[in-house]
Length: 255
Image (tube, rainbow, N blue to C red):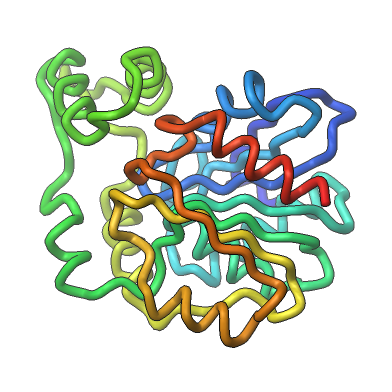
């Protein structure tokens, strides 16, 4: 495995392995609660994408590079075939991985996939400057504003695992350049999963990430190989609706 990619694992060591890919600004630790409390029997292999968490900040931060990094994770785990769950930008990276190495991926679960976004919409939503806070309490207030439907417990854990102090100020543990590039990558023309890879797309009703054109293209191209489900939640569905999200993942991966 590329040493630059930091990998976490949650769940039983002998559980069925599933690669779990976080979204923009996130980290592999965000899958911990879902794995340990709701996805019993599955082992989530959860890397930090390049430019995020404890992985290298070195560019490039393209979807192609993320896919290559994820393939190196599979090599390190000595897994010949497994399901991949991707959230937001991580779903776009998962699609690119499946297209890069279709023989290695058995199924795809795309949680609120952010791909093929309208450029103006992406520009409006991306942070216009790095997030810097004088205190961790200020960081918490900002995060609660970003995640109004996420529990205080999960917000507190995010503050502990994904924020750090430097020169007396607090910042999220990701490269601003990498996340800015990610928003640009999400505006690229949407790539579809390989047509013979069974795929579950779970959209968030109150997110606005998933383009109607993407869903239509999946239906036309993949036909019976794609299932599309909507949850009544915001984009952080595995925090907001963990039971429903876990049930969908477990059912689809176990088929």
